[in-house]
Image 1 (cartoon, rainbow, N blue to C red):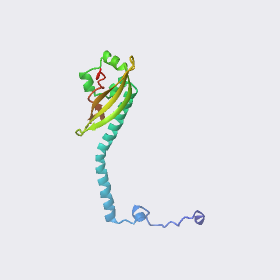
Image 2: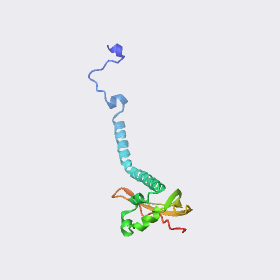
Image 3: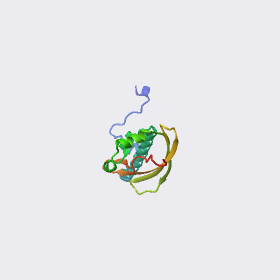
Image 4: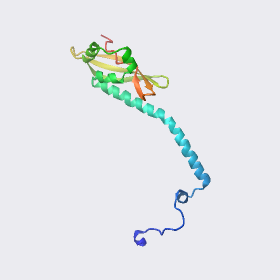
Length: 164
């Protein structure tokens, strides 16, 4: 039966484990353990990678929300502290309902301290009543809330009254 399966006969009394399979000695195992520990400790640096990934997805989702003219949903990205100080009125929401977003292009990223992200976005707006198009610049400031593990838009929704 062993010949049929082409298996080598098992040796009794010898342990088949990591050391025997790889042929490593005790110093090599210590080195591997030390390197593994160092890798685990370095994974703490991945928190900034996760934070950057979260920023990228948040900013992208916010841009997509504005591209679909969904300003009410875009309020979910605004820092609640900012909304508490400057609540959105029905008049403000009605003003946003009068425009349609035609373009949303990031113009540049500005230097900012850790935990903050600033960018300039060019937004093309079409007035639903007159069908005229104009472009505004939105200076966005985002900050990271470590407690909530979320990026918040600190600058609020774009000022669509520019250039009127």
